[in-house]
Length: 93
Image (spheres, rainbow, N blue to C red):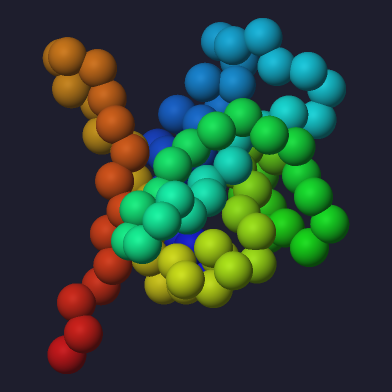
């Protein structure tokens, strides 16, 4: 399962709070081609893995994406120029 840091979960919730989402909409992390992922606003679908923060679904992933990102950590870093998400995979020993 993808690990989402507290800061990343807070950032996802803040995004959803700022934009005009419809009931049930959340952020979807999806694969885009080979070794690329993207974020979009979507709804939970049958079979999705879900991440909640403060009792709200903030992130969903389909089964294949969740499998590909098993053991990866989603982090968020805020800088003076904004912020961004980073996916980190533990180095193999």
